[in-house]
Image (cartoon, rainbow, N blue to C red; front, top):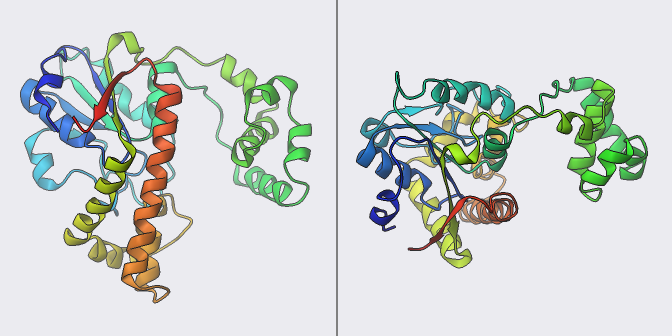
Amino acid sequence: MALEHIIRDIPSDRPVLIAGPTAAGKSSLALAIAAAQGGVIVNADALQVYENWRVLTARPSPEEEARAPHALYGHLAGDQAYSAGAWLREVRPFLDTGFDTGPRPIIVGGTGLNFTALTQGLAEIPLTPPEIRAAGMDLLAGAGLNEMLAQLDPETRTRIDVQNPARVARAWEVFKNTGRGLASWQDATPPPILPLENCTALVLNGERDWLRDRIARRFDIMLDQGALDEAKANLANWDPAAPSAKAIGARELIAYLQGDTDLEQAKARAILASQQYAKRQRSWFRARMRQWHQITLPI
């Protein structure tokens, strides 16, 4: 990636946001900006927060972390729940200093919801108790979407994708837990911590075939860098329901170690899962980050 002409146009006195699909080169760009202008690289990826998967989540290596200050990487246990709201609370101190007492933040990651919450605000909805979530899963498996939708308020029904079970279930959970519709909570969203006009917001827009090839090659690199050893270290305490188990490649390599598949098949499945994830990311960024500065890759 030719980074020089990107970096020279970036003001050094404003926070920088770098979004983009997996394997697009976000961390490389963040490091280049930090090297040229200074700053602390702050993680905005929902899986790179977990300590037990460094290689498979493409966290910066120890060598990369030595080149610039890094924050919010690998600081949570693998079974600890995490959310966009929790991330906002952790990222706020890096923005509240006014850069007088700390370096300018360079916030980088592939989790679109974190960036949306940061720049557009996030409704402060109480956490859903496990029993309500379980009841919702039972209802969804039985009566299905129509029964859930019938229990929602009309305004919420007009705003959500009524064909998406996850979206409908989330709206149902919020209503059952709080007695308020999701739309009402959204309308009460507080102002954003960091409006777009107060930062430099970049989104890397990788061309489809170029990105798919990079993903495939990167998984080979991950294996060379010890991804299988990392999976072995996680095997004894493996819990497919743990939040960190969503790391792409984790289930596939664990399946290989448990004798359920061979390594080539595990590798192929992990690469496909990563490519599918990148497709979802690109769709999110196209739909919700139109006001960000688009950097088309490869340059």
